[in-house]
Image 1 (tube, rainbow, N blue to C red):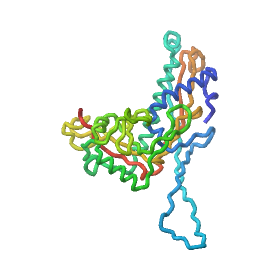
Image 2 (cartoon, rainbow, N blue to C red):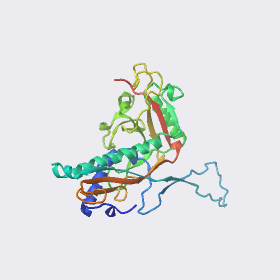
Image 3 (tube, rainbow, N blue to C red):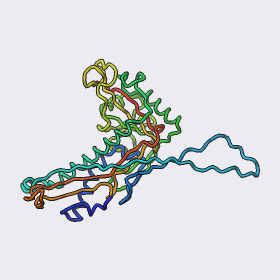
Image 4 (tube, rainbow, N blue to C red):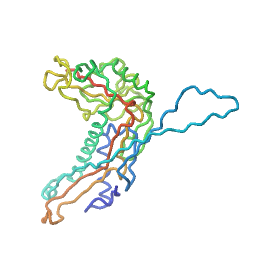
Length: 332
């Protein structure tokens, strides 16, 4: 990807850096999936193929040594998972009249709105990839069309047991919530991401601890609390399948009033998926064209543009390290 200073049009390098920083500052608090994926840092002017590497576990069959005899050595087995990056972005049109007559800083407001949009757009792309995981547990029944029961501690324990039986490891680090790239250590835990409609049911669950009572542990943005070994984060990006479940019966949310809306709750262990982080000066590129610049398509210079673009991808690295629970949400 081209360096950021070469992608803007008629604003200074200082202003371009400001626009990029504002985009990232507005985007990063909303990037839930960003924090827990294996990161592929985007090199400048590189291929569109992101390569994630997984080292496979060694065979643990008992290998008794013979005195004085060197055992046959083993080689590390690796699995490479590749994903093709795609370009995402959008722009806002600013007319010369708006720029000349609006008392607010239109450029700043436009950049802030675009930063929020960038986060939501990329999060929806990641969610679409991750909700397609193959490990599924239902709150009740054996199919999505059966589901009309909220999340429960027993369901969570089934999910955690499944993850542990696959030797999935708790997440021990997360991408920092700042525009700069970097990770921070966290207390070992599995992480679950759910829609806010499910929050009340989670809070009613035995063993639930509110995030404000963590003590020395700092909650993530959007984190509401934990239960046993799982930390829960809410995001409206994790949208339900409307009217896809069993009979609502008036006790769970239903768009139609008859069939329950089914909510995915995504549980993750370490290295479940890979992402390109939205961090650093090459991750998101702002473009600003101020009104007043005449061209063949705009001979009076009546239009200007503020936009962004980013090369991104998301890929499941190991289906065994993630589980999708499908639940209903109680009517309040």
